[in-house]
Image 1 (cartoon, rainbow, N blue to C red):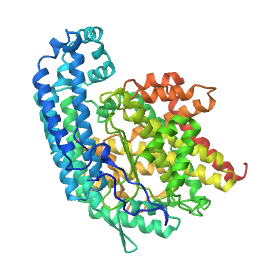
Image 2: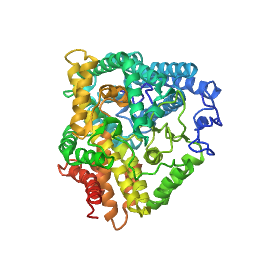
Image 3: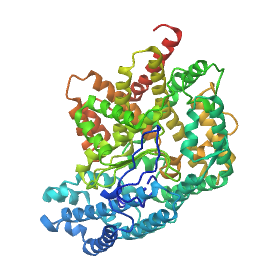
Length: 622
């Protein structure tokens, strides 16, 4: 139950300065690669070796100095009390986190490189072994009575500073196991779920997709699904399906194993619902998530079904094939967006909200905190890694120059700004629950979209932008809740025994059919598309956080538009809070309440209004 956990995914032997690969979006423009020297100069650097030795030794010393003594320390004040203990603990966690972040980012840069993979695995093992010395600390803290903890808060200001972390920790108490069992779970994680996560990553990175005789990695292959030519989209979809099908056995085994692994953990800890452990980690009530899920599923006909029927007409089709779902509209531009234009677009939008936000985001470009090109072996997708408060975040992208890539840049920089602002809370309290972690990223997207929309004067361009935003919101809200429902089905069924690939496929098709509606044909081949979603593997039930964040931001942005002043200050205070406040406390200054049944309907109504405007454009009423 230590705050350190074995390194998982999304993670890059890059030495400083980073070398150029020649990856471009235009004929003349290089894409930036990150410089990880702010963490460590290289995998074999003396600094890294020394920190690893020191961290391991410090963890062992911490156990010797404090194990079995926390109850006595609770009665003390000053340097010998719990304030000193938790300060020492945080210092070790910070060092562990720095080493783990470097190994994770090194690995993300090329998961197919055996040298990086070995480095990643070796560091993962050493940190997991060393962190067993820290396991006792949160467990033993939770054995101290509430009255004694309150007295320690009152007597020791150094300890009182960590009240939010302690209060969060004590929410885990009902699910806490005996110390030796916790140690076993922790040590076995390396050969358990962490090993299966790594197998998924390395398998996915090694896949090649034959599209027109060219063997592509997954990111360029998925990018073909937004090609303007229908035949290219179809060829890409079929190539993706063929390769996923060839590897279906391994993905089925990984999914079954991880679902069973989670069931074992949940059963031992006493979680009643299959998603309760995620809700606890997110510090959000099950009832709030259930309300979100119900509101979204009830809106499927009004939003996603209606939108895809409209899009089919725009493309001159009776129905969309699944590979046409994200096809560009005839009104959309084919021109690739250069990196410099993407940079200026996002920074301009951020500056329009508040210069401070743009100043923080600009550091990512100026200081080489971004790795943008798509390369063979590189981790797919995009992420912002917070590393540790004493350093800074890093952003990974697979930039192809599409409009969606600009929005992804805005999204990940939103995370980055949030992580920079929350760093002041320290290693234990900077981290934000997933549901709130998506707030700044989605807000960054919304700022960028609204900035671009205001500049777009012609009708065709406005329609293309509105449609793109509607699709992005459908993908973020409806699609992610469908993913959540799919996961609930798979984890629920797994309790009755292993699922075959056909059974998993049927659940996938059922939830997709419900969310996408009758205007989308789920052609043969789509039944295996569940295989490539990394969140199912690395973070079960993560996905509803996207819908939570999007609907929350829709409501938050409405407050911003109607605010007479002071919104920016409250917004930055929310981000600076990191993980020190519950969502109810963070939203209260804006007059928002996620437990209100009408809250989610307000967020969804923003998407509906976009579709209403598109419908009015189609029938000529505007």
